[in-house]
Length: 160
Length: 362
Image (cartoon, each protein chain N blue to C red):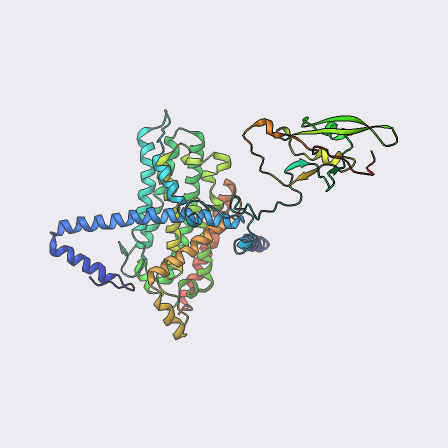
């Protein structure tokens, strides 16, 4: 008799779990406004990528054409596949001391795996991940970018 | 030729007379056969395409996607484009395949599908064959398809195909039992196996409501077993993509693959149509006891529309199963059938007998 009750309860429990599953998928099907598909080329103008999206490494500059990069080369050391090359130069400060500064922050987009290690390692927060993902170009050399803008210099008060 | 959207029997009768006036009886028979055959083929092709489109859209909705959107408005022409592509593809046959059986198999599957469709009552007077053993005929004929599947698996000379075909055979043979027994439950209630009589006796209320709990259980069992019989949904281990590449139709390409594909979808339509006819009142409008105005409004909707509305509802339910539940293992499938569905079904038949004996359903 006990076995019979167990059998019947198994059936009801099974039907119950099946209905739970159907309730979840049913919620999906009857709320089509929650769909995740992006109609990409059509919604290009309104498309906003999510905050944590890793499109490319960029170096933000302020309105005075100043960035936060000290040229320390930690990002270059941290890059697992050598997509970053740092060319630094020596500059004289106002006190007449020699100081290292960035000359060219070269970023090979074609080799980058978007692992985010350079951004994590940067001590001054000079580089961040950008949102642009339309990287297709006709020439491979165009994938090599110089991140610091020409004529830019380091912002005041950035310490190494 | 009078055309009445609520009753097609006059129209077909007039068509018959019109042919008889102009031709000999033999020629009339041949012409009528041709007309019926062509209309069935057209229906299978068009409704198959619609079902494939609907499946892709419904699947997308369940996975919070949009589905095909590019070819035509809302992707409506997508399946037509796919079908044209399939027609143009090369037919490749494995070198060591059994040539004759390999070519025969898709046609057996298709023929079984067409045979089963012959007795479906689409609307009043819109039924090709009206046997007194209609339900028996459908269950008998729809299980012929498994021969085609077994032949396809065997003749392809491919181990995946063979395993898929064998699984399919074991599954269909087991679940045929549940389908038949759940239909027997309703035959007890209806007192007839003729589909037109079954539909006619659901004029006041559908068998799903008339038979109380036993017919509800029978309906659920019919849906589960019917899904299993069409090799769909959680029971698609005969063509399990992740284990067997595509099961019995691995080696088929082009139009022969399209035959298997189309037959699978039309079989789903047949299961839904049988569920509609036997449990949901066929082409009968929805009637509620004594609410006269409501019943009158429902009568305005043509029976053909009613039939397809119900069928599409059941098809949506079957798709809901497919896109919700994970695939069962072979042993789980056989356990479900022999340890659960079959005993429940037998007890359910007893319950239905009690209902009928006590005249509880009247």
